[in-house]
Amino acid sequence: MKHLAWLIVLPMTALAGPREDYSRQWPLQPVREHEGAYRVQLDREVYRTAVSPTLLDVDVIDATSRTVSAGILGADAPATPAAQRVTVPWFAVPGARAGEPASLALIAQRDAQGRILSLQASTDGSPSTAGARGGAVLFDLSAIRSSVSALELEWTPGTVVDAAFRVETSDDLQRWNTVSERQPLLALTQGGRRLQQNEIPLQGSARYVRITLLESGPPLPIAQASARLSTAPAQSPLQWETLSGRALREGNRDYHVYVLEGRFPMERADIVAGNSAVEWTLESRDGDDAPWRWRAGPWMAFRVDGSGGVTASAAVAVEGAPVRDRQWRLSATRGMPAQSPTLRLGYRPESVVFLAQGQAPWSLVAGSAVAQRAAAPMPQLLQALRDSRGADWQPASATLSQGQPLAGEQALQPRAKPLDWKQWLLWGLLVGGAAVVVTLALSLLRKPASRDA
Image (cartoon, rainbow, N blue to C red; front, side, top):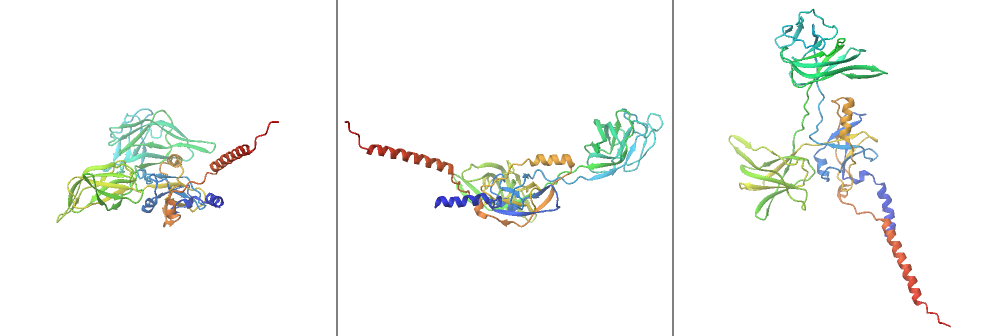
């Protein structure tokens, strides 16, 4: 009967999909449909459900419960906001010759803000030759107050560009700093395909940019010039978990122990107490059988609350961040705390990036003792997509809907190993063979010996 029960259970186990391996799920709501890749930020409930120290039990499945390619992006890789562009005026430099720098002193008329009104004369006494073969082009960035990462040029439709330029920057049109000795610019068409290089990388906040043709050639067919402003990734604000501790004495030292429910990527620590001034050391570990590891301190945590307001110490960095340990403890190195202080641990939520594979809708699942997210080269894929679609490209956003239970606590329990039928069959054959040998031996012993004639 037991063997019959195993024969019934095994097919059911084989049919069980990934959804039954997880404790909870969160249906995903894409902000835009029909995108190839999406990004969703994890929330507190997901961290409290996950049990894997590396979040391997956080995954994405489609409507048929099949897993899709997914990976976790750390909080140190936030989505980069779309770059801003500002159209800038440009001027063909009068009298400039290919390969020769042109001094622009006294030939530029500017307003009080430094914006160029006109370029009127050549510096070497030759007649103005704007638009002639060779020369230079001046871009006026004086109206921009932000840092510029690049100049982007738009060409007149149907034109061909294949030239190299020296790139220089200046703040006063007199003293010039060389940014690049040779910057290629291209616009080539063949067989219906177009190869284009219309970007001039820059750094800083120079007011003017000049490009000088290195070899004789036609003037650049510029239709429009834009400055791409530098954009710093917007770092997500810290979120905090507040823990209450219990006093514990080990050996000759007093500790305050805290239990963290969840796999949060902790990076900052803070102490909240009444009026106090105590020097603390912070340690953590993942379980009772693991050694304690130093995370911060000694640092003085203080708070003074009086008529002049509240003054308190700042949070400190957690060593080895992000740290997902479950157990934390404080020990006072100087000062006497009146009671166990409140420990605050801060983290920045991570994100899951996944491909729109399989059948929509998709769901994020978490919390499993057996399931693990398959390894996928998501960082390399994202970089390849940016190389193809532009540096500003980002996965489309998706949001988490209300969490729903799946297998619940049962998914968090390690499963018993299935019966190894090959091993049992081998043992059966061995025992059966031994029984046959014993039977033959007994029959020979019981057979009476034959008498000699």
